[in-house]
Length: 363
Length: 262
Ligand SMILES: Cc1cc2nc3c(=O)[nH]c(=O)nc-3n(C[C@H](O)[C@H](O)[C@H](O)COP(=O)(O)OP(=O)(O)OC[C@H]3O[C@@H](n4cnc5c(N)ncnc54)[C@H](O)[C@@H]3O)c2cc1C
Ligand SMILES: Nc1ncnc2c1ncn2[C@@H]1O[C@H](COP(=O)(O)O)[C@@H](O)[C@H]1O
Picture (spheres, rainbow over the protein chains, first blue to last red):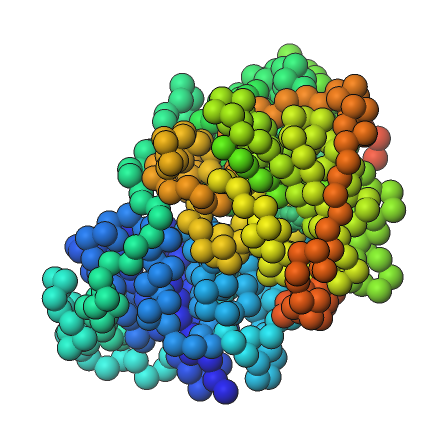
């Protein structure tokens, strides 16, 4: 049997464009030739409409689910709506981000589907089976897992692991700009053809179907949780997002005192100090110096990672391909998979030496 | 408030060069030191603080083998009141869904007001908490980094992208997965561990938990580990060689070429 493929998007989510690309890439890998994927976009008007239009560029079918209660992307609510909307044995894709991590595991249970978290690679293996590659043990080792997907699968996909598939050949049909049936009462009839005339890549001319009234026919699902507000992260005294050169410290530093060594190095290098999450958790550094998915996104020219293993959540915060140098005692540390230059060594030995080197060079 | 914290004993691999065992489906664990999963320590600390504020009890539970008992004792030394080991040959080889269903069976026999898990463990899956909540039909919130108690509800904060925070109202009983940094877990001294050595830890198997052995373990698993492999180095780093002094000089030169000052 073929499994219909769905990509779940939340209009309120961060980095929506990236997520659309990620999921369309993943969808084309798992959908095979016989099926094409459907994007489902949850949100409140008007944001949901721009999100639907964005999804149209990469999905040929987009289902719009709009309601004022979806102003914030509450996974508990969206999980209930997914149960009303998804057919049996579906393959359901979402990003492995705080929204997907909230939604996915419980959705798999409710759909009776397997759960494949944080997938880097996906492969269909004949009917009813699928295999995936995931990172385990802090990214030192990858695991290939295989899953029985006869009852469907919920899959969270590692951000950045899939890119936009080659555009299908015959989507160059001329259509009007995207028009979306708006308002809550649009109903199922409110489907509209949409497309975008862009130069260069020809986008998929996606069709938007409004499923709002269908999904909410039984009313708003009662869930035990409600988002009260969103609080933006605070700003600190230094803004590492603007730094040219960063010296970033990780748990390879075993005490707060040892960080003084890194501060001295940063000073002679004319760099700012950044860090990985555990140093913030330990209250050794301010949150505003944390690089990563739950911290800052930086784009320096040079990034020196000291005693940082290179977890994907950390690397997610480094953009713009800086020159990346790493010092780590473990030759297998995943940071060396992405570094340009590396020293296998102890930060307590390497850092003071390096500071000396720069001091002498200045002299 | 009665709180249950699910914990996992995991090998500390960050500074170790992991080797893959001959059959390709596990790592060589002999020389690895085991510790309680980092995220779970924060969860236990939070549970203890809540109990100390509003009363009640903290239990810790793990699905594992005899060797994992020490992890439970460590958390008892930290301040948990009781520990339970869920262990049975039939549980071996469980996938995440299997672990969640074993924990579900336990919670049904020992109902609590609040269940805490870590955000993720060594499988880096982040699945057990959300699955457990769904199986128990309880509300769930992941990546929680603050908990405030309001009568029969909680106000919790979820850490989302960029360090932004979602403030969430959630009904009790519920399941929360805890993110690091929510508190500063207390230090556990050798004396505490010695005291906890005497505590009786009940061991519960499939029969006691009324679990159908075919539903869990290797037999029940729908997600199977095929193989482990070391990821390709890709473009890879130029790994510097020579004495420490030579390596450092080369690194400094490379950094200067990239335009780090003068
Ligand atoms: C939802 C979520 C969001 C997250 N967001 C972030 C984020 O924004 N930023 C972030 O950084 N992390 C984040 N994390 C945590 C992330 O998963 C890792 O746990 C974290 O990045 C590890 O930090 P680390 O590399 O400093 O520590 P570890 O992984 O413990 O690595 C320490 C490294 O230091 C090396 N080392 C040890 N001693 C020495 C020595 N003497 N000299 C040299 N090297 C030494 C070790 O070999 C090891 O590689 C997040 C996790 C989750 C679940
Ligand atoms: N074997 C286990 N026994 C008890 N709790 C577990 C077990 N495995 C995972 N958990 C819980 O689930 C959390 C997330 O783990 P995981 O879903 O495996 O990433 C952990 O932090 C624990 O709280």
